[in-house]
Length: 380
Image 1 (cartoon, one colour):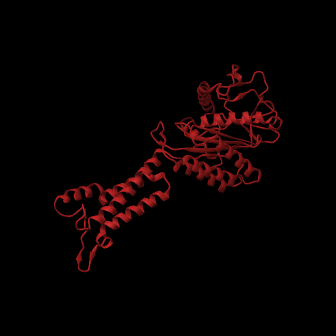
Image 2: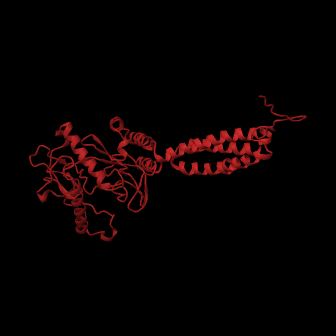
């Protein structure tokens, strides 16, 4: 860190040790050690043997020339509780946008994008449960920074420390790096940031990371989201991001990306399959009721109202009456809580039509002439 002043911030995640920077740094060192033990070498780098290269508790350094923050993913602000550090005005709740350097131009843009990201969580299907027992759906989070720490990727001693950070670092600017080196640094930052933020308990999270000095976007995808967020979707995200950013419309581009991921992550999930099956049952039941209610108005049909045919008549009323339609509708509405609104509306219209037919069946299927009822002639 030659030529750079070390700066650390105190996180408010742990209220019991708030204000104790030494204790806080020790906590982060323990977390990073455990994290590094699990994921060290996962990108093909060897673990650092020099303990001086380990994470020292400083999330960013200050460039004395430009006064810009130079970020590490180690201890990077988490939008779920580091609200102010991430540029958010909230004081509670789970959020998914962190813009500590203010790349977005207004608070209105920040709040709008964060809302779009929260809508992804609210409108995708439940996939698993967290350690606290809370149901989890897909999450998409975004981190934007001006500058990142630059590792010396040409060094013979290149390694990855206990926090997953490439070491040793260098004072060169990103402009001196090749495109592949910029990509490697962005990937390292984004992948380990996803692990550190840990928004998903079952690989149901996506993190979009952008570093302005690298001009690189990296999309880190959990294993469960990977089946939907394919390479084509990732290419779309990167292309869209760069295009809107270069045209000075970053906020608009992020909203487009959020909407793309919202529709992508809805996919065909078990809840949608259940909804489709329920709709099929409703449609078939409605068709049966039309057939049944019409035929039972004919005097000599097989669903006649006299004698032996009374038994099947009551039987079919039991298994396909209006009470069943109501039950199906409530079931569909419950299961479609996170499904397209048009599906629930369509199911409601079908159910309402069946209820109307049941109440006004004599008027709708009036088969009586002015002189009395007619009969159905059956010839051999």
